[in-house]
Length: 100
Image (cartoon, one colour):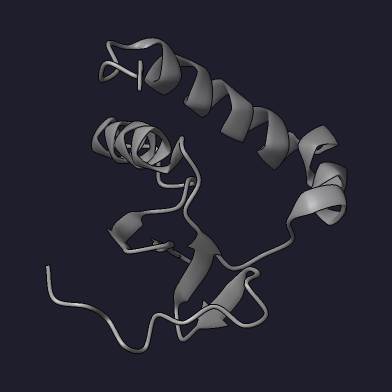
């Protein structure tokens, strides 16, 4: 794979580049990318789209909106309940072997 010169982390931390979120690679990164790809194939679009891994940097597509603590407020409204209901079947279908 050709090295992506523009995939550079700022201060070795999460970095935003256009519509990408760049993060440091961890031992579980490839497994998580497989799981995210599986969930998206199952039709769940509320999870990040994995873009790739280049050296010590991983990239996923940015999903606009709140995250972390700020996102919890949305879990108790009607759309949050519908979203949770959509996620359950996708996650329980046969997933890729996630034993890394």
